[in-house]
Amino acid sequence: MVASPNDDTRIAAATRTLALLNQQADTVRAELAALRVDVARIQHEGSGIPAAQLLEANEQLVLAALRAQSIADSARRRVTELTRGQPPALAATVRAASASASASASGELGQAVYQVRVDDLRDANEQLVIAALSWQELEADAKQAHSKQIKFLAMAAHELRNPLLPLRLAAQMLTSSNADQQVLTRLQATINGQVSHMARLIGDLLDGSRISTGKFRLERAAIDLSGVLELSIETCQPAMDARRHHFRRVGSLGPLIINGDRVRLVQVFTNLLENAAKYTPEDGKIVLDVKVVGDGVTVSITDNGIGISAEALPRVFELFVQDEHAVALNQSGLGIGLAVVRELVEAHGGTVVAESKGLAQGSRFVVTFPLVSGSAA
Image 1: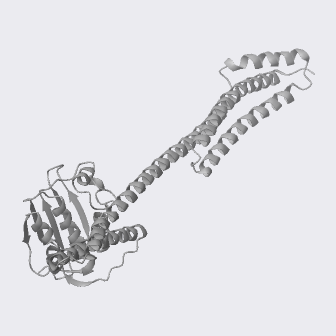
Image 2: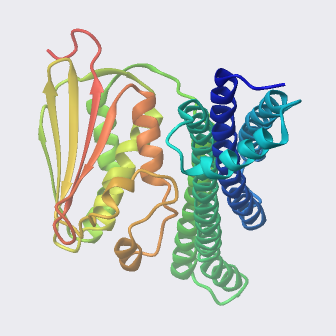
Image 3: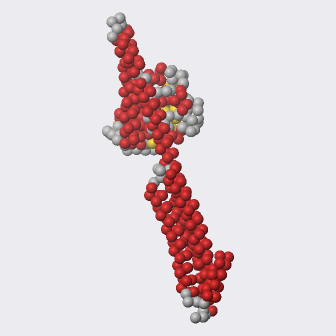
């Protein structure tokens, strides 16, 4: 049987395609082997990577390699069919053409198919990289959360332990028969003060838990915000007087009717005023300014205290977060108060923002609530 010129042309073209596909299949297998090594390394080092992502990446890699191998096998079978029954000389010609086909410019179809396979591998590799990066981010978040939890537990234990020594000493002195009425009065004040402090800490812990679980309950009604502010000021006045702060309230004094929970709103402004008193040096200034703007009311509390660092400012309302230089100045607190403030303000449909030009530049907290229709007058 003698091959026709058309058969020779088809055989030569198929042979070149086969050689090119064999070469490309080898390249794909090499890339697959390298990627499998990466997958094994990442699986070993990062067992926390979502298994579904890695399995999907592996599956795509394997399927891409199998598809490339299948194409090469199909081309090889085609060449075998075309050369079946041909003279030995022609078969030798086919083998020679196959050996030199890798340098040929033909085989555009095979090149296009190979490019599709490479694109599949590239997509799979990108997913693998994304999975690895996701694992790294999750690991970093887990480490940060664990570190924050340890610091918080240590801080909470320290804060809850501090009142115990004064309480123990007061209890011992109460058992003494030599204690006169004046001493008993001081001991009673000490006990009341320390118990109130512990109750406040426990309340903060409960509020932190409510923030985490979203279980804040509000008993809302139409109330006058001016009365809320007066009660908050009255509560914090002793702390400001003890540090000889110059406090002023300015702005609107008339009725400011909002839909809110009186107890929780007093908690909001008491926390903000106590923070201002805590972090403002003696003889410092604290100003509470009330303004009606459109259909809302804005309350700003400004001090000339220690300020807030640029690093801490974006995170002051996060749970258990405290500015380091504030902790160094005042060791009390659990980093819960401002998180509670934001949660309660937003639950009332309002907003709260913190402003500071930096350390030793003072700070300003601005709270805005919507007024009940017609109350701005």
